Structures are given as C-alpha cells and as structure tokens.
Amino acid sequence: MKQKQPLVLIFLVVLALLFGGLTFAIKTGRITLGPTKEPTISSGVSTEVTPTPEDSSRCTLYTNEEYGFSLCYQINWDLPEEEKITPSQQHLYQITLNPDGMSYMVNIYDQPSPISLGSFVRNYFQDIESGVSWTNDIEINDQEALQFFIPKAGTTPMGIGAVAFRKGSYILTISTPAQKAPEGDLKQLVNEETLTQLAESFNWVK
Image (cartoon, rainbow, N blue to C red; front, side):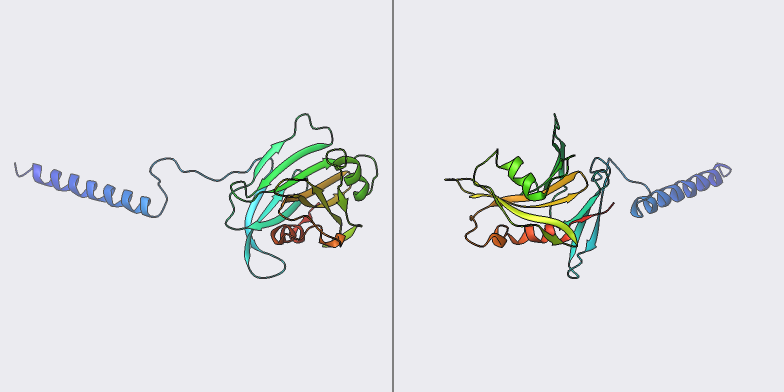
C-alpha cells in the first residue's frame, strides 16, 4: 500500500499542473471555448479605427481596394453592407453605410466615355426623376466633385441629397434621404451634416 502513495502523489501533481495550465491559457486567450464571431467585410475591403483629418475624434476608416477609395464613418455604426449590381451596366456596386439606422449609400458607376459630372447627373438621374438639380463642379480634398439633389414630390423624405466624385471612368456618389428640399442657393443642395462629413473624408487611394 505504501508503494502506491508516490504514484498517487505524482498523479495528483500532474493533474494540478494540467488544470492550472488550462486555466491560464483560457484567461490569456490562447484557448477559447466555443466559436468566436469575427466581423468580416467582402470584396477586398479593410477597416480600421482612425482619427479624421479635421479633428482628433475617432471614426472607422473604410477602404475599398477593388474600386480604390476610402472614407471615414462614425465609429458606432454597424459594418457596411455591400452588393454587386446585376446586371451591372453603368451601375456596378452599392455599399450601405449605417444599414440599421439612417442609411448613407455609396454607389459606383462606370462611365467609359469622357463626360462631366454635371452631364452624368443630368443624363443618368434625370431619366429616373425630373427636377434633378446640381451645382457646378467643386473640389473636395483636391478632388473633382459636385452636389446634387433628386426630388421626391409629395413624399417624406423630400428627396435624396448626394455628392458625386469622379476618377477615370469611375463615378462615385454618396447619398442619403433628405428631409427638406433645398431652396435657392445651389450650394445648399447637400446640407445634411453627416453626409458632408462623409464627403469631406472621402479620398481616391489609387
């Protein structure tokens, strides 16, 4: 009986070491119990939290490698939802920012023939809704852009406010439902604060 005691002690020591090691691994995250859900975004997109150029507040930087652009959206928003348009024709891609709240849409169009942003807005959106209005070309972050408004008569919201950018054959718009139609000054076509922030953070990255 006395010969068995050392074996029992050795077994208990080994068991204690195994239990202690397992507890340490779980606490340090080296071992996880059950599946973990990692946020993912498709189509070669990366996100990171970064300060905006205007101030030190934090936001989430969205970078789309396929179409070569980035912008910064509010840090408390849900992950963007993305959709390839089928059949694509001119309209190629749509990204919904803040999908569970007041949505902001990013749409990418392909316009292979040289055309001004104003002509694109007139030719593409005027066919969808009459009364579309737009500004002259402006610059945002040294990039060609313009503002435009698509009215929705007799409904709330009153229309869609948008900013358009162009690089090469790509034309990109950032838009959101507008609760109030612009009056008078065309520069006030897009007067929604968050949309303005998105546009001011936008950059072509390649």
